[in-house]
Image (tube, rainbow, N blue to C red; front, side):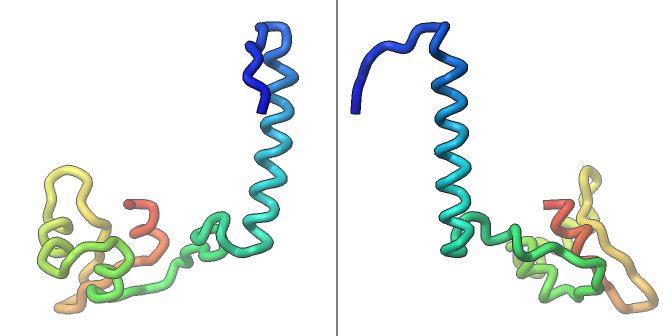
Length: 95
């Protein structure tokens, strides 16, 4: 690997070359299936309940309940009677 100094005139060409190489690396990683584990999983507007919501946001059940009542940036939730539910896409947007 050459460690020559890059001049300001060479900078656009070097950055362009790096961008092309990065695109190739990302393509290879996507083919292998390890580039972005969340790119294949697009959240849907489907109803999830408390335990699954805990798994999505990575918090315990008690933290989930505290987060619902948080004064700033509460966890988006809905309640119908005694049933508490969430929408998957809103939880991912909240994260």
